[in-house]
Length: 249
Image (cartoon, rainbow, N blue to C red; front, side, top):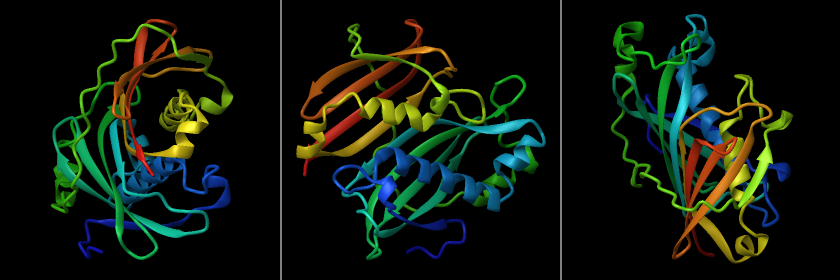
């Protein structure tokens, strides 16, 4: 493991209630862990949500790409490393590595974040905050997976629909970013998960949705285990897009 002080390392265990029927950690739980690690890492460096909220700012996840060779199994210890790769005026790139109990890297993730004003919901200038000190935490640690791609969906046939309920809504009052992941993965039959595993998963967040919004899901089957998904609210506005790539176990 890297000893770079700009890399945060956080330990976890695959709890029984965090795994699926195969005994492996679910993508939703892994996503939550990644976001928590981002929060821990930024808080330790003065850019956490609580500190930003004092000035009416918050972090918003824009894009996420996860690529895995394997997933931690029930009761196994594992850890997640995270670091900042780039900082631009309106966005920052944050990467992750998933490390198994033997200390081997079994997966990586890339994410793109924006800082927005709580009042206006518009992006803030990252280089102006704290006199640009966020640049001090940029790290050159390699992340050998492709950046999030541009996802296009042509299908106009509704695969599924649901109304956003209580358990979908987070502290910001909109549908939680991880709930979209869980709803998207529910689109596929359990037979597929028995025979294959997710090799790569991408999310691109476009707009917010709220309690009572009706979410509709559209899928393009690209072939070779690749699926593009689009989620709209109330039949019109796109809220997110996803790419799921399955591979044989």
